[in-house]
Length: 293
Ligand code: NAP
Image 1 (cartoon, protein in one colour):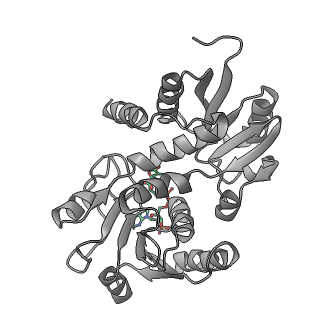
Image 2: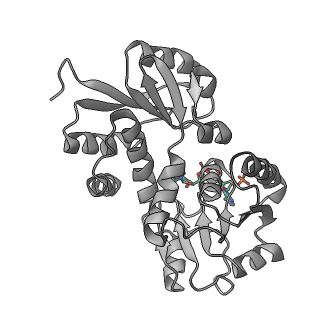
Image 3: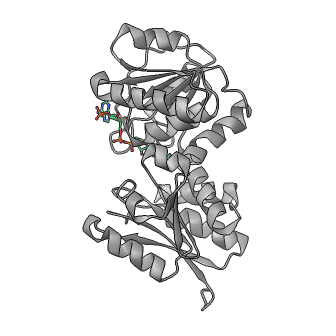
């Protein structure tokens, strides 16, 4: 029951009707008995400054930010946490008594399920291959650098486009982490990609290839070259088993989809707003039920 004391949370984006965040967050809030309500708000790009001013004026405790506002919102905030600043993307805003702080919880959402499976320090000194070089890949690269990975190969269809990203993260590695990680962009039809698969401990699909409704396509992977113990992580969550993941499982690799990343970024945001991260299993169940509809 919402009352006069209920505190407000939201997700803003355009379009927003597809967002699963209200289902996930309200499940957590209700389960934890927290007096908050979480709503989805459609905000067209030209109204973003007015919307942010309005949310601040109405004393919303915080909100998630999705496409197309993740970068555009940065100049409208008072403070940006280091990961969000480095990535140039905010997915969570915390309203700290009128001071708006931007954060990026995709990083935590991505890395926590991996650490839960492989161990807190298991990525140190390991080699990762990331397929794709878009917004999600940026959060993945930051997370892997923070976990002490030794080498990152970014495999894409257009390496000329991805090389500036590799260069940017070589600089960010020097500025924020060890500075010793090898980061390269390669053509996923070339020999350098195959060599990277030979030494790969962690293979991540950060492209939309295989996402519904285009479930019949998959990123290019030579499964004969991939080390048998390599962990395969597809950050897509619809369908739950993509072509990439079903191939990975068929070849005997440990595998994970993007459901826990989605719930993980939501839990990290909730923790920032309320101090409580919510019941992970209940949130996953709510997500899976919503995806069935
Ligand atoms: P994005 O910014 O559009 O980047 C997509 C990347 O994939 C780019 O490198 C792009 O290459 C490549 N790509 C796209 N279509 C391709 C195709 N047909 N063939 C080859 N490469 C292609 O997308 P994003 O925001 O990074 O999201 C990527 C995926 O991650 C989406 O499926 C999204 O749903 C998922 N995701 C999941 C979570 C989660 O919480 N689980 C969070 C964020 C994103 P070009 O630059 O050459 O186009």
